[in-house]
Amino acid sequence: MNNKNHKILLELLQLRDKDYDQFIEKLYFAVTTDFSLFFREEMLKEEEHRETIRIMIQYFEEKEEYERCDVLLHILNNPNKSD
Image (tube, rainbow, N blue to C red; front, side):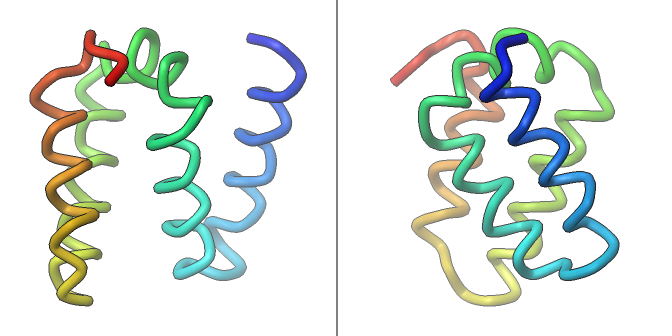
């Protein structure tokens, strides 16, 4: 893991307990941008991390942000694709 990815993970861990909405926003950004390849290749191998994506989908469903749900569902169902 490079320093940029490590920094992203640390920031996410700090936000999780302080500001859940901001945590989800930053996690969504991380999963759907340049960090996503690392996330898909490494983290989605574990069921615990796949569950994180499911929690994010539920979060965005409650906010009626269905486009984000669609992006996350695609990642969850296609973890080895970098599109």
